[in-house]
Length: 321
Image (cartoon, rainbow, N blue to C red; front, top):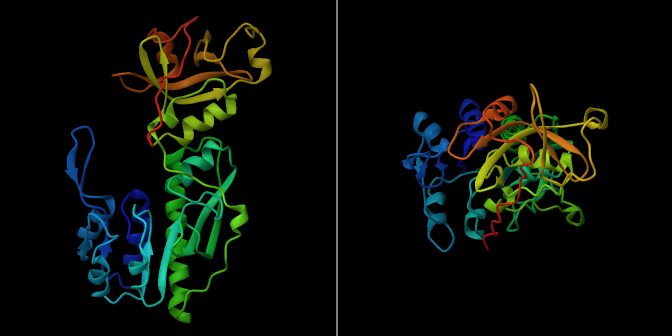
């Protein structure tokens, strides 16, 4: 059971392994891309290529969907970023239980957006957990874990790609052991150490320049897949893709206590616009003006998109309830 690109390596590895995939469950086809054409999920594309049975229920809670699954008599259900919480009647279908491939070191970063929040919170390490699912949200027992370093230039895409590959490898090893022992062996999580990674909202990308330089860069990286980081200059909104933190010696020549967070204080030839943060300065190295394409910092300067004394401000989006 899976839907996005993150789940693809796990399905592909399962198809290449000694384990038999009897059915694939994925979200219904949805509009995607600029043209908003109806498209199958990445997982469905793999399932079609492998000629596997596919189920795409609109919802599974409060329906007879568990009966459709039970017809396949699965030993184990593997869930990887499926996008719906499994109700008790589905959890009880497989003979041995349900396994979840989760992109964090549980109990840290339970929830819908573990990769994004790990980067946003300046974590230096994260990983993948194979969890024996229960009725809670990412609260089940830990079967296996693998730790991964978060590199300075990692964003949500690069880290997701790394974790999806690691998770696929870890999953096959776990399934080999489950088949051998004919049971899922796990240890309980320490619930007192739980950290939540809630679903992202469009307003999470509305950048607050009163954050530190490191926090600002981490938000750009963590929100790169969706919703992106953005800020307003006058009546124009600019998507902020990447920036470099300036050390004190680099900013000594132009530092001024009168500079306000969000203010474009100078243009650095060959690098980009320099912007004041709460604790220093960053140079924007990549951004996308509204209606345009992504530009390097140098092109932002040469194109006159940003110059002193322009100042970034929040767009003012309200969080969806």
